Length: 203
Image (cartoon, rainbow, N blue to C red):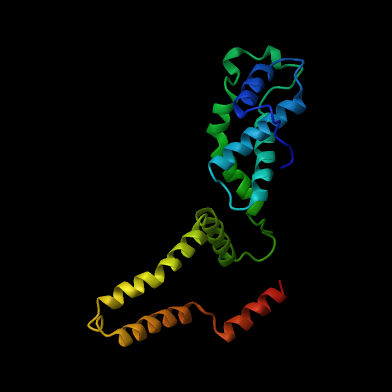
């Protein structure tokens, strides 16, 4: 984290402090910005926006800067009409978190194209697919691992439903055959392994 959370301040207390001081001329912009950073960081973690730990810090810096710039500067903040003031920083941040997440991911992950060069629709399609897959792949790895752990039990259950269920030796052979067949289907061939190694070498 870029800023360490004050041990004696809860997120609610930081939000209240922000609301009580943001429209005062003697406010401390450094403290207020850090409190806003922690609020954004907390909400992003609570919503489980990212897979990579580093993204939470980068996003919190991005979101807090965007939100803070929407407030008037210190020299004119007190003259801001009440009807144009944000009443609750916590509620406002919650409301704009998702749009900010989308903007952050677009700016961070999207490739910038040089349209003076030859445009290739295939590259754009692949990039879009990767972006969508990244958004929806959170927790996929854990789900696959859990499914793989259940596989032996599933195979044993299926073997017990075959005509050979009372034949111990045949049941064992069927079980091993199913298990090995699945493992082989998940294992890359030597040709594909060599191809992947070449790709990594030239990246």
